[in-house]
Length: 250
Image 1 (tube, rainbow, N blue to C red):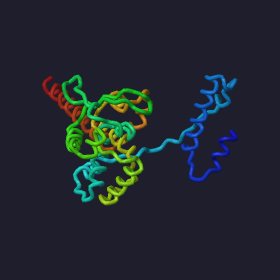
Image 2: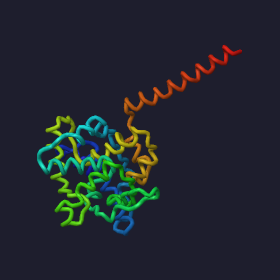
Image 3: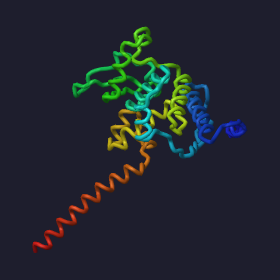
Image 4: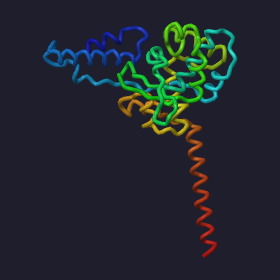
């Protein structure tokens, strides 16, 4: 509790940031008990309470604008391409940074898949590669930096990537504070869940160990709700006409 009070006095730290600090502290306490450094866990009864937040993501229109817009600077072109790669694979920055040609394998369907391991959870990930992703990979096969490093894509540092993508979105007038983690949210929300991919499949693609983690992304999107209700309306209309025809026949 003293630690929590101390954190409350720090500037620019919201509740969820504070809870993340205590969450890490609780992990250290468990580790201390495990290795015999502590006789008991002093944080065992502390309950974490995170505020629910709306995770930002690109809409289909914004993603299309990002994909198709003409950019002048080479750095902007590269970062835009890599961001789009993130949006269609759902990978995190640290996982994409380490990718090489060896990570591309033939999947069970005979098509190219990307096989890697999440650095955060050490979970194996297998992602079927969409045409957009394959085009980006092919584009950078002969790129000097990729040949020199043996990497799949010419990825800059995380700080530079986030800096450049902000410059791109400002130029394209996309009114969102983009970071490369938002590309992962975009994959989960706009690319997969909005297009009817089951949440169990999305969870597998994201490399989540628990379905509850994926449910954070399963937000209700008005267009998807509208589309689903339209399908229901058509089915009910057909059923109503069928019943009416049967009544007329009788």
